[in-house]
Image (cartoon, rainbow, N blue to C red; front, side, top):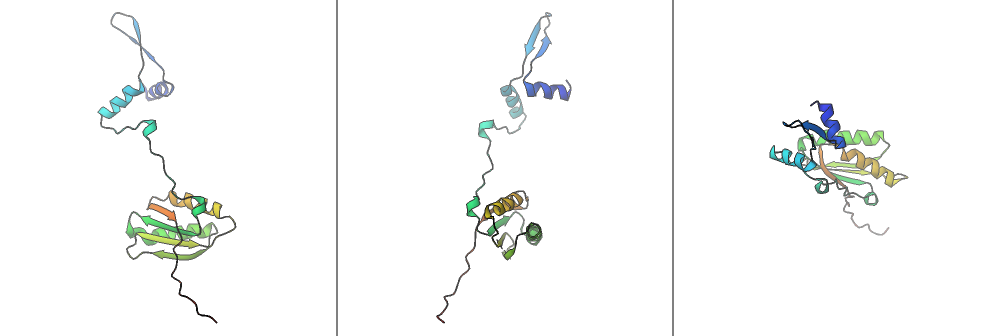
Length: 153
């Protein structure tokens, strides 16, 4: 059976006629359960639609206050990833106030000046960072700097 015919049959759930030894025609239909069993027998891990895990966006638009922390999969790529993020954000009109990379190279932090529409900014940043394969995960967080108390003037 051609690949196209099989794909078409599977997509639309069509049946095929098969001829038996007595000359009668028998309808044969592959069921999804039979296909799943066949795949699991071959060692392929199959999840049913209800079992699929959806991507969880842990960063809400309202969480964005200008700061982004991220964790890298490979610390050796720390400087390269930071430069890529910096170039992209500057091209999109973001102003970087602070940029740090941990001594181990595993963690990075950017602090941006908030613009007119923080919700739109957070969506842009989240979309860009979510598609970077080098990042393990990231979150919106503003690191508080330790402020020394000022004396009276």
